[in-house]
Length: 443
Image (tube, rainbow, N blue to C red):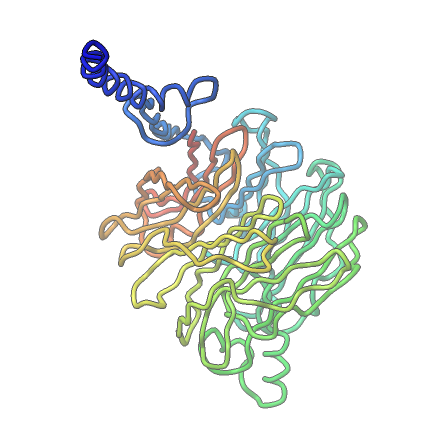
């Protein structure tokens, strides 16, 4: 029996070593035959950092003196740029240029309209749009009364690539007060949808009580309202709706198409002077949803910040970004919806601090969300910021794309589009005391 006892004593250390080796090999054996997972491990490859954005100048076709740009992407992929510039003898003219398909080069600019009785403002600017039928649409603002704030929307359509333009039926009744801050969208192949801020109930209140209709860009008086309409290919107005009876007086509006209809975003105004961002949606049955807040910031401000929201959409995903000072200092926030704007997750902060000016623009493309906005960078300069986010608003990559020699409102509203795998931006610069348009492309 002695050899058997001795062999057991010899086998136990070997068995322990064998078991230890097997335990060490188990993770490797389990990994055989499958793709490596994302979890950490000594042999996991290092994550590849996102490439740094490449910023390059983008020459724009506008002459010195141009300002108030708009930038949109046409259904065929071209980029359309519009701007205002001084007329040859007096007044202003609205210019339009399109890129050559697949490039950032420009076709010759065309004149959409010109006049000497236009209302020209750094924030309430002309807009343009292109539909699937090849038509081009544009609007500008014309004076309608003795006050500077008496102005209305002039809408025009071109069916021959911009060579000729025809005025459409009126968007709204001609009256005193202001009508503007327009946003456009495609309502089918050949119809144009638009929403705007409308002062007709201000005028009604003024007629009843004698108060000046145009003196209400602050607290008090009847509020502005949000209205929308659809114009057909022949220019006549097919439908018109009141959407919200109390809005901020002079904040920009925005719109985007979701998988369940067009959404419009704007800044609301309640009886307590809370100025938070709201959203409405045009449903498939032709009715609009009731206004709802994207988020209850609770920003009390007895005036108009002239700093409206922006929106982008992809299928059922909707992103809205806006400026607020609800917590006591300037802040840009953004929130995401996965149900076509019916509800939104809690917002995230895009930028915060006393240098933030806002005037945000959004674009979705390439599996990401892009946001552009302005910040002060010194007493005499501003910076145009561009940030890229994952769809869930995580992992921001932020780049200062330009330093502007501009102060206050002189830089206007920057414009942003996604096309051909890149972000395209246009804005108003100031050189030698005069405006000039500048552009950049970020890949």
